[in-house]
Length: 80
Figure 1 (cartoon, rainbow, N blue to C red):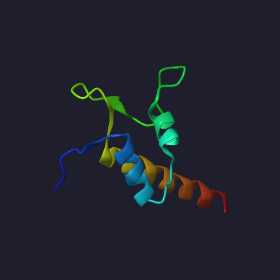
Figure 2: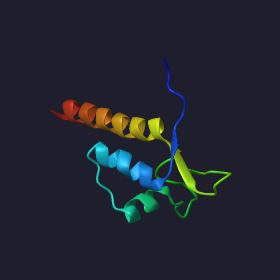
Figure 3: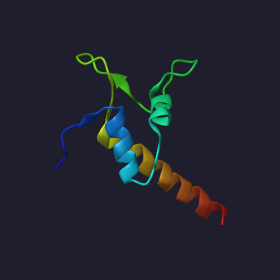
Figure 4: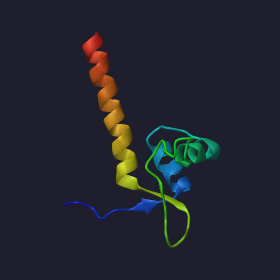
């Protein structure tokens, strides 16, 4: 059974990552959510149309880190 989406803000996202062992400062989290010179974000945050704050779907955030970990292990095993 798939869980419904759970949208979280910057601080909650930082806490989710901390629970996974990724300790980021509030400033680092904000930089990951801010747009770069090309208008892209490092993480898929969006502006909540009601609150006007940055949000991200919790499952997406966790999935991104899990996918990168799996890819890193694949790359490591291919080079070993």
